[in-house]
Image (cartoon, rainbow, N blue to C red; front, side, top):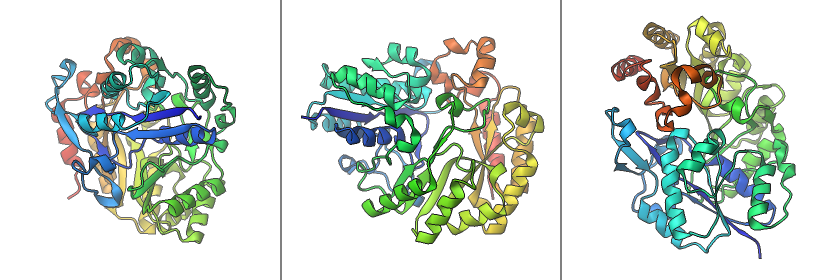
Length: 443
């Protein structure tokens, strides 16, 4: 009899959340691995807007399958009382989640994932309910929050085990010890051997997500990617193409989002051959890149391929047009490279509304005029500014640099929130943030 493993994607507790092709990709890859190894695996995705049990609470799809999450207003934690916004639980209502749990056979182990460090209260609330209904079932917490802040996770959730690693072999070793089995996961430590993410849990979804790579070759001071994956890994174009092709054969998807942090790195060997395969096969999918793209890599050739292959959502990373700050934070793009990228994309057929560009707001030592200048710079080039409030992430270069100065180790992770951190640190005010948002609007 195979061991039964239940995977759970928990609630989000925050001021705002939007389904921009948001799926628990790590859990979906893990599900595929576990099934390959003979386990009986199931999933409850509390954030699944299209879940059958959400019929009375479903939110309509917007463009390309995105949309609002169902939400309920909850009490704001005391430490966030200074924020003039309401606080919400995003995802399934509590009674729907409980019913989903009650309808399951008792699992042998439950794996809960986590994402942002400042969403930990949603994780804790999810595990509270799990432990009430399955008090004797071991609960393992993994994911980004668990990886970055394992000691905090141990103290602030009821998880029996906190997984400090994202290596499949170490996750496998933990499961082997809990379940008293001996299954070898070492082959999955090579990203090339990862199966496609298990999307069988979303029969009603019009989109799928995957990643062609792990990590990034750049070491930007504010980014957790090199902390989570110190080594950069890629899959071969033919493997990625087959994964996409299989998605189309198995599911009625019209859209696919890439979760890569570095989609265009080594583009001539990886990304461009993959796109050419897609064009040749005439897959008729819309593609999306919600994570910031490296503008440095975009030239006329790549821009034309993106347009022809129906890449509908582009998010470019600029962060700032201040040359000193560019170099100080990682040097991943220059103004000249960004300008070439925008011009190439415009020549290929993209319009201003298509060319959204991330601008970081509220960085340490960033002044108001630098933000205003960057917003004008992006708009003057014919692109659309997309403001990204700065957030501090444990383990990053910025964290190590500012830890002692701001006593970050003792900061409640709720204050890592990108809607909160810079204001709390007096880097920026709520009034200035609203001013920047108004300035960034395209008429």
